[in-house]
Image 1 (cartoon, rainbow, N blue to C red):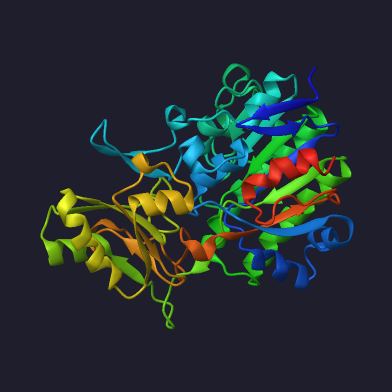
Image 2: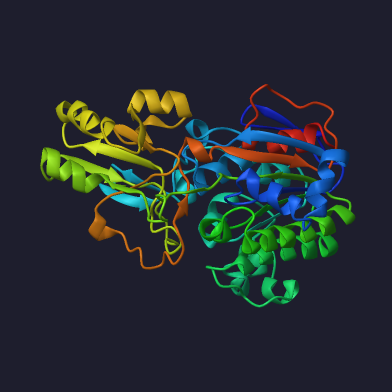
Length: 406
């Protein structure tokens, strides 16, 4: 068995101890800080003394799919191809979900480790990521959302729900993330995988700010399971796919720019198509509203007119053309629009007001997607021999855990 594998031109040492990589969806760093301050997160608190506490940048857009795939491939979206939850497929002339593995252009560290003889397990909260994370993986891979539907043939594990011993959680609940962690502990006890990836959901972070009772309770739950994984001898690397911010005015009302309505009014209907890559099947908690959008012009000539209209809007942080955005954010240019639009820290972007159902927003809107949600934690329960490059990325977590923390 080779001691190393090379994946997407990066070399990884195969784990000598069980290694668990955790992606806490929507984990703005302040959530952990406040939970530690409240005294409910002793595992996180101890990392400063017996582990390593760093910060890193997630990839842009700061959404779930691009970042989870960057984490498990070790490279940016320009290499693996997943640049949103949703995109416009010119071959189909349609807006489609980018959760099909046919859109993935790079192998994963997980599948490569399994091919090298390692026992690998993946547990994700929502089933939308399972196909991408488990692409070509010979091992265990299932979602908490559909833990009652697992089979040995399709998921590498039969009856995961019974084995974990918890009720099937609602997809809109903190319980969905807890199931992920509980499954990780059960797998480490019973299957003893060499490498495991756990990916949660940001339902709590969309609804509750750092330091609130609900947020602190959620991070206390995470802290307890991480402690169990640590006690079982795992090397643990923790990061996030993106941060989270309030997107409201001083009265708690959503700050939304409905770009399609504005462009239709200013330039005429049919002159521009606004697409929101945050869109996925689970929109109740954010209404498909984030701080990143792409815009397609009807003709090459009107792109500059669209850019001028957008650049003058309050709440817009930046308007970038395709070449600039793909170079700055390491995105596949053919899978983004003619323009990329970023909302500022307090602003989200919509298409048309009539197309967004905000009835599920029972608390002030919190969301992500922009540069203001790019900074995320990068934590380890081991002291690293080396901390890597000057600019750390969340997708360095496998490199640091496997090459510098074993």
